[in-house]
Length: 300
Image (cartoon, rainbow, N blue to C red; front, side, top):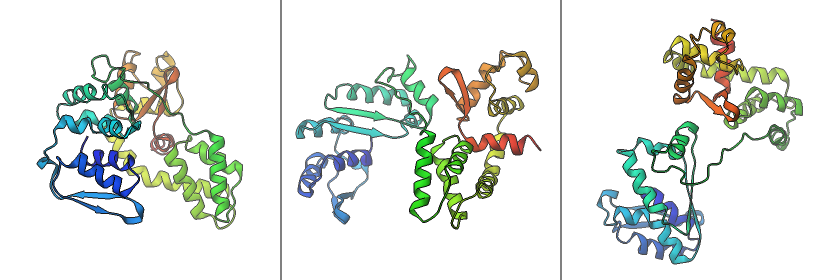
């Protein structure tokens, strides 16, 4: 936890300016001698005059800051940390994780919500018996936003700006992007830009082709880092193959022997190219990459 993290804890735990300022003096008094405030748009912002390395607050005190604030103010607190899997990139990550857990497990008034975009890395942190955060808490896998919700959302946004798009075309957009949050919104936006009054299937196709074209160089660079069998494995995933060890699939996609499948899955997962879903189903993380593999790469 760094200065910005602790600052965020303070900002969400106080709503009144005087209360906030008093808290800064109390909890940051040992950290940095110079503090300035900005009260723009009723939002308290603070900046510090010295680098974090000059602080007088101990590492243990910083880690216990959420618990101290929660205890003093008699309020339960939730601390949210995004992209938590990046903790593995710290210097001596295991030692840091042990230190973190030793503090957090004693925080009776604070709940930690740890989330990230790299499923396999998070699973290693929380499901690996040898890791400090093994079974630290409950794990929740977020499902994709349902297609029906996307259809309603896209249609409403078009309508709010005086444009029309049918439910069928909304369904077409979500189908092409496999309900992927970022890509579904991106394609919807590109269709909106190209629509004067009423969207059409031709406009959706044009916008989708443009997105694939914009990302082609990126996808080509990814391919350059893979072996022929790894590429063939991704093609099989893109085609919806489920039984990778069958003799027919091994021959069709030139995957070698069935013993290779485990290593191919591992390599693709570690490169963040595929997700292992419930039921041991495998899916490419990037739906546009899947289309590119089938429509562009395969036809070269």
